[in-house]
Length: 98
Image (cartoon, rainbow, N blue to C red; front, side, top):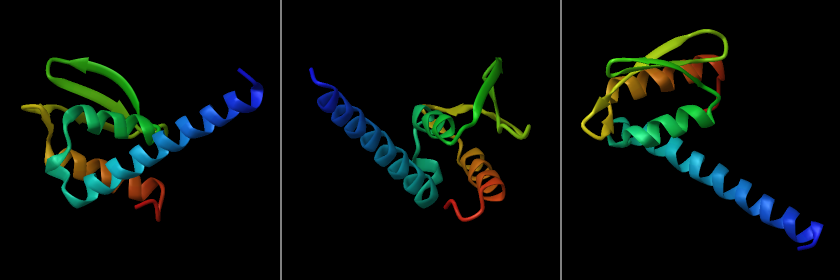
């Protein structure tokens, strides 16, 4: 495989990931109750949140500036109010992002 071909594959993979994150972000805004828990965690990870720890059913995620957000499942979905808290915090930390 040539370097040029490898670079092309990396760009394609990166573009796919960015598009997926943008779609998840749009879905979170449009319907906070509609995200699966796995999608919510993937979105948090993509937006630079860091998983810190888990105690019982609560998973603690942290914004790099130190804000903590506990999240938990509601069946297989994320809890709507926690998705909204995440979106509000993200808007405060990165105005104009959504």
